[in-house]
Image (cartoon, rainbow, N blue to C red; front, side, top):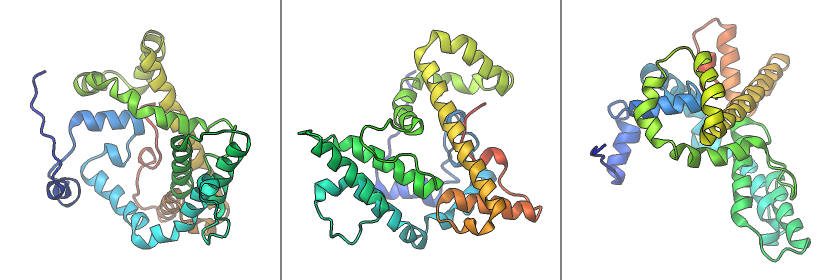
Length: 267
């Protein structure tokens, strides 16, 4: 299309664009539209007041104090992946996650394998870290031979697949999203695009898996909070946001809409 695109890599400029002056440097419409289809009305697909409200609620979650409190979870997962590489059973960081990941790799070596795919185990470990510290839900037992969680497989395939649709995302998606209702557009995807275009079919399935998994976890958190509010003391992001939602609901105050409080695409 002969467009001129500026690639910024200067650290100071990026600090202003992404952090200090982000309200001035808003994301492009194709970026927002694409993220809305993938994730719903979340932090990466909103602008203005809605975005600021979500960021304000999430700020405490990413504070130094909170991240420090999550370190036992990080150690636990890491040791699960790395124990037989480190061979240090006396380490003081032998928490649950690190033990699991280490044991999994150790079992693979003891089974006769001469090589270990470190990328495979680090990817599974990273997903489990996100699941437990972010969602408060285990997505991978880190057991050799066990089938990976569908959510992990979907997340891993998502970005490469999206890049194959760059032209559609940049030049067509904004117009397509103005046609009909979400239900109508979903029907078109199911009955027209999916049968004819393999990538569209796979992207639809990936979004469905991420959406359904997130909704299931979110609903489970709500049930637990209603039964025992003390569970809201959980340190994971989902527990904190669920507690916020329940708190504001009890006070009948405006809070983040349901469509923005859980991940999920254009359903």
